Length: 122
Image 1 (cartoon, rainbow, N blue to C red):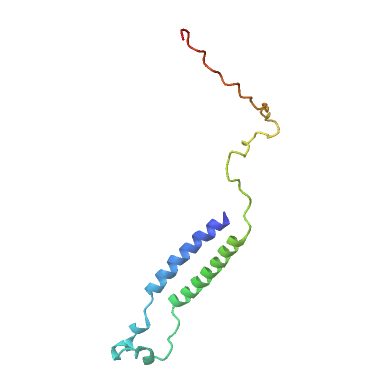
Image 2: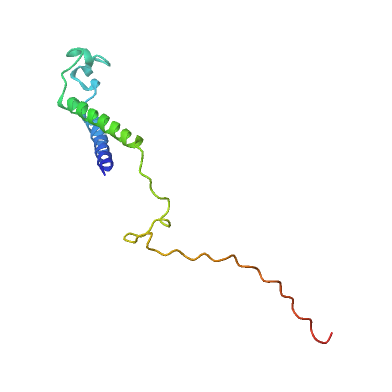
């Protein structure tokens, strides 16, 4: 059950990270982009201030990492034995010892081959 919840949260984090990355402006979209390619990073300094979106992306990436590690832990845990078929599993509420066993029958002997009688008149 917990693994399903973590998988669901992991999927939500995937979509949230993709959405946040697509909402952020690229480095070439700054005010200095009009001065030529690659010059936009040097107009207001080599590094701008961290925005709310970049901080939120870092938090979501950390949560994504944690959910990835927890799902990997769940995947390496030994799984409980599950029967391959329901044929060998007794029904719920029925004690397996209370059900009488079928009697074992002796192997049937094959009868001697029967030959048809000879036709009369030959």
